[in-house]
Length: 110
Ligand code: SF4
Image (cartoon, rainbow, N blue to C red; front, side, top):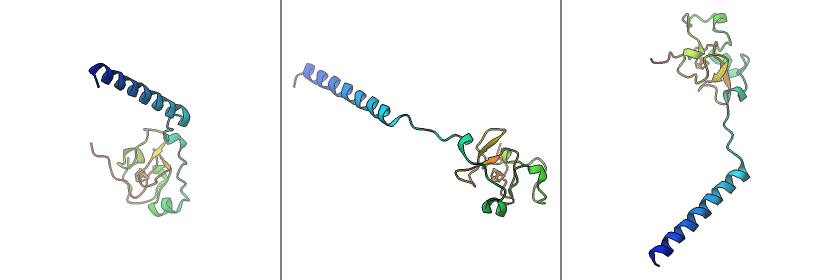
């Protein structure tokens, strides 16, 4: 195979590969990324939430383990926005209130 044939062959391959990839995206659509807004909120009545003493508003917690200022938003398990609701690693597939709290609260490292 000459150098020209080799380059032409590579070009055909790259065009075919690009076309195939574009077709795959068109057929399957772009992957949908789950957003925190889409996650159902953890209910205080949820068995896991009850076991962990989760409350949607930390200021309402009567648990003596809670330190003033501790909320989900400053817990290392919280990965959401500073307000509203966001994911917590202890409640996979659900979101907790940024103002919430539970006994597993662990302060984020600076
Ligand atoms: S582990 Fe942290 S983020 Fe999750 S509910 Fe408890 S306090 Fe909130």
